[in-house]
Image (cartoon, rainbow, N blue to C red; front, side, top):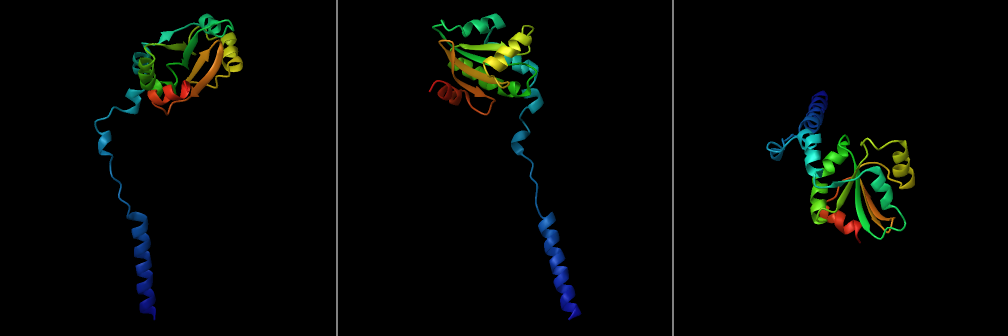
Length: 161
C-alpha cells in the first residue's frame, strides 16, 4: 500500500512539474531586423513625419472657429514630447498625403500655448489630450479622433463619413 501511494505521489509531482515548467518560450524572429520602439518614436522621427503639415499659431486656430468661416479644416493637436503622438506620426504623414497636404498642425507645446490657449483647446473645444484630430466645417467640429490605433485610410473614412 505504501509503495502504491509513493508511486502515485511521485507521478503527481512529475505532472505538476511538467505543467509548471513545460512551457517553451520562442523568440520573435521578425523583431530582429526591426527598429526599436525608442528609435521609431524619437522626436527627430516625429518632426520628420510631420514636416509636411501646415503648422498654425493660436490666433489662426481661434479664427478657424469663427462662425462666419465657410471653409472646412482638419486639425491635428499634438506635440513632440507626447509619446503617443510620436507613435502615431507615421500615420499622420500618410493621412496628410491622402489629404493632399491639407492637414493642419497645432503644437500644444508651442510658445503660444499659454493659459488662454489651454482654456480654449481643452475647455471650449473639448480636446481631451493628444494626439487628437478634428474635422471642422463652418466653425463647428463635425467629427474627431482621439489617440492612435488606426490607419490613415480608416481615419479618412471615419472623419468624413
